[in-house]
Length: 286
Image 1: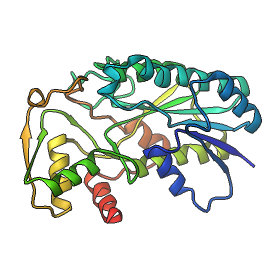
Image 2: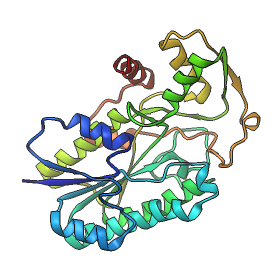
Image 3: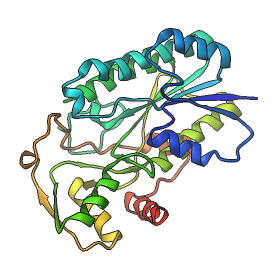
Image 4: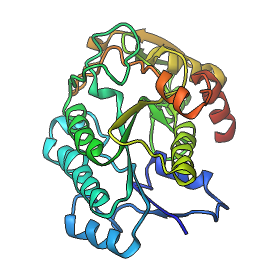
């Protein structure tokens, strides 16, 4: 039986993969996370890979606390760079295919048109820098999917935060000068599975390739919050503010919309608009 290792499986994306795969017995999926498997420990990773010999390694493990990374960069780089290096080296050693998840935060946001896979990264934050360094190791062994503004039914995320605040307050203030695209983790999980099953059918998981994936459309964080509150039919008022009015430790790219032409063509897929996926998500949440 074919085996797929999913690291960081207790996170948003890992949990959405687990939910999608309920009842699938054609492939054995090995869902791991701390403390069972720490990707930053070479000996532990080597032992796990030796014992289980996965055909594909999908790395969903990441340090994603963007602001906290500014004060603890060593932890961010340990997970987002060194951990990826260790997994990639094991993939190369055993011949396993490798798929790694990265972020729109590798860009500085100076463009005004969607970023393609060929655009030069220039991260503004420790988080973005650690993820970019991790990409370099990932590409030696396999492929990278960059995504943006991820939310899911699991863990904490922007959608859940806005829903909570909108129930507690009469008004919430959200930045309107940062533009990107929300991504429902369930949609990204389906894309990852498409790559996995394509590989098992055709033995064609790309190597040294980057793909961009988010939902379709463009919005600001303010637009995103406003739509969440409207769809949830909450009476809270959402007011736009500028980034400087809500200072945070890490700099964000002011524009990080991803061009998804390559992944649409490669997989032959259509991608839902962010408002459509948000609507579906909110219906399931309640």
